[in-house]
Image (tube, rainbow, N blue to C red):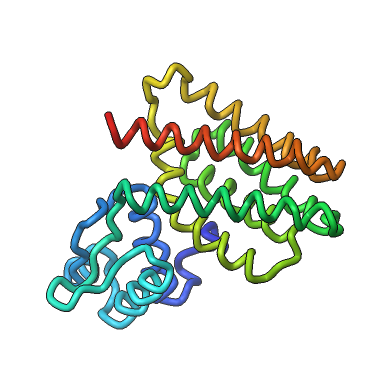
Length: 227
């Protein structure tokens, strides 16, 4: 999705989706918050149909949940689903590394490089939402290196689930012993190493850096939630 496209040229449902999506990812709409259709219509200046279509799409992406009496609520962030998210992230990205060792990853390295440059630019611009999206694209291209459509689909779901966690990680200065700027530098360095290990087919070293990359992310989220 090109979020930089002019909103005036977007279909109404797409405009509603983008606005609600960004508010969920950036936590302007808090986990567990009820999303009343009438309030969203007034806030977005849109009719019921595009707002309802956007909410249904977001429900399909597990960004919101539909409840019989409450309508739609922003999917809560709980310790249980955070734990499950990181467990699956590790299983899928390490499993992908084994597949990549036997397959041609060249077609996807260019996409990884491009996403990595977007990560760099977002860090320079202090564009946290842009950083979340660029990081997501990087890991999408990583998954595609597996040449396995089922793994790509599963990892897309897990990484989409983690977007709000990414925003928390990238937007907050946490007293973890690592400054936010150092965390940005670590992410950039690890992305570079992931690309290099992939290119050289160094599977064991690739797994090490992927695990370290996920662990650094998880540690920041656990610290944030326990603070």
